[in-house]
Length: 393
Image (cartoon, rainbow, N blue to C red; front, side):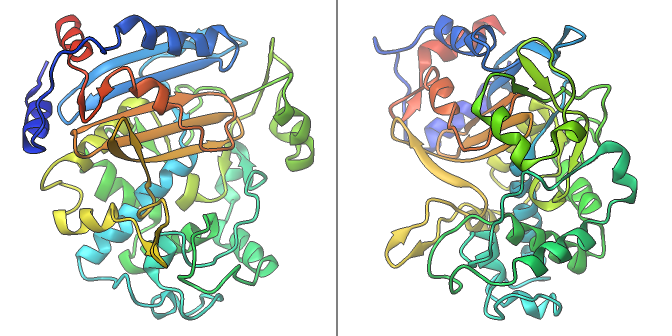
């Protein structure tokens, strides 16, 4: 297994990883992950911890299909939901790098049909500081058999008409908005002359070295995990008010209520399907110096957190910011009916992580704070676990 990228990243940050008595053994991380399945919190889980060269630790447990008793595998794909936003944001930054869009110019300069405040800039959409409204998106889904006839622009024209006002003046505060990313998807299509799906496939998926069967915008039920909602749960009780349960959910399977195959209406903010390993490859390429995806200048912009009235917003351009044991990270969660995913990178350490569940998640749970703590100590990679990973891989 290659370790040079991790060694280089630690050395370049001026850090020396030392074996200490405070290290965490391997068993607790496996127990933490397995307990998610054994404790009835999810039918399946996938977790990976990686550097820029390799997956250092990988764990799969549970079932992709409860009724069929089919186990999860590395080729199992999940709805990625809002993790898709990081791809859309990267697409916009790529276009900015090419000189096709000025992030500080108003959106209306590129999309004359834009109906919201004429002062809203592209950068404000990227950083969720535009004031764009954010209606509850859980019901914005359609069945697999409806997808060929579905027109997302027509659908969102209706949503824009029903939500015509911004929540505040642009640039005065932070508020997450799925609709802002719908507009960014339209911007990518207008400026590139390609569909959003094809642009991201050519300029991000292919350039990350990811096979399109691993990560794309097309639902493949043969490799896809069935999404579930726990039968005895608050979410299941309220879903009847939020979605058409007879249409979008099947009969109870043990402790779980399954979702039937569906698409998210908002491709730009939540349309990707993929494996955990595909997200690893994507994040590895983002961590690279002189990345094949974006140059260092625009990568710095991608991971720059806006400050409004002297207060950081908590989010860069589609990547939430946080710290774990003194190490900064950038992350995004993706959640909705039947699935929950988290992707994270620690740029100063040159490592990252991903976790995927085929159960409903509707908030940013920061599960990776628990899992990654097995490998990360104060300002360093936990050397005891890292040595164990290398010797057993």
